Image (tube, rainbow, N blue to C red):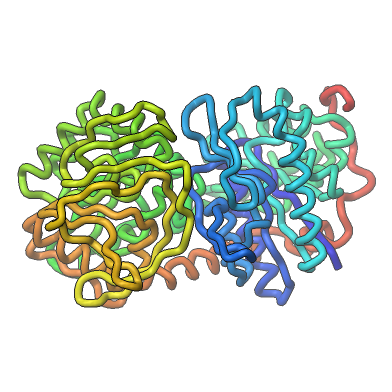
Length: 513
């Protein structure tokens, strides 16, 4: 067979990514050869995969997670177009893993036919290689100002004749209006592909919801395929840092007698904020995102995560008072960690004629290094070791490079082959490697070191925490939710046979295209 399904949403963060992953895991457990697909993703959270030519490439982190749900290694075709916002007006275009351009809204229009052609070709290849491809839309399909030229939502569904389900987040309120309105704003040909709805994040008595679901069916002629309950444990591998609350996950009780408090600065253009998720899986480690200088003073560890706009976010740190709070944290002998762009901000100086084109600007001066940006972008997997030979794996995505350093500066890590990486300077730590805390032994060593520097003598790492196992539990939970709360027989019929032929039109609808 060559089945397919598009999961669309009433809004961003309605639950498209998790529902797609859950359907993928359910099908995978049925023995179906299934793959995920998202034609275009807009996110600064990306993963690195080595392509067929041996070069590293980027795809959206959500698609890497969905690939794992299918029992697959990530494939660049799963997310052929990735847009990485560098400002409110521009984004870097990553096409089949490779950065090819930086665009604005105006220049995007001229590039869109090429992107659509690439996306359609990637989906066609996947449908030949897999029994089923579960596609994820982007944002909402009812963005009527963006419908012309769309190749991600209903443009994709119409091109590939994909039955479509629309998921809505009931926790935000207004879910019935959002689902009805999404359908009613589409033209007749698009509406003919919308087969039904899924309600996400429901809490309470399902009986109270039932009359509304029946009224929605009467109004639209379409069923609701199920109601997914609120699940506190679904927070790993967030596609967008805005999906995070203030505290990541549900911190388990400490293994020792004290907690470790980690404050992560939520930069305006934060990238790969998922780096800190592994820390939050450790019992007794409370990880919170903040933009408040006062909250840094109470933290044991301050983390500066990656950034798609290093120089601009550095200026924001200074304007908000966070730069002074970080300096005071270090002066008090408490640890700081910078990852990728955050590492670069800790330098004495940054020389950037590539990303911000602002030339030389002073860094925070907390590490005796200088950073120079180059047009060549490093995108690759990384592996090596830390203190005492502890194995570390990660990946790199950056334009900035260490161009000058104090010869006596100790590296934080050592790449396979012996080259030093990052910096370890008193209480200040830095690295260009993302994903290092997924290496369990290194994570435990780092947290033990941080606790000692912060004076948390009662903190103890739990010896058996496995991040890989935590991720697998999340994927299995997603599969369980789909299997237990959705009409999987009806979903399978959609995937196998396409949209029903008798779906009614709901006025007013957009003008026919």
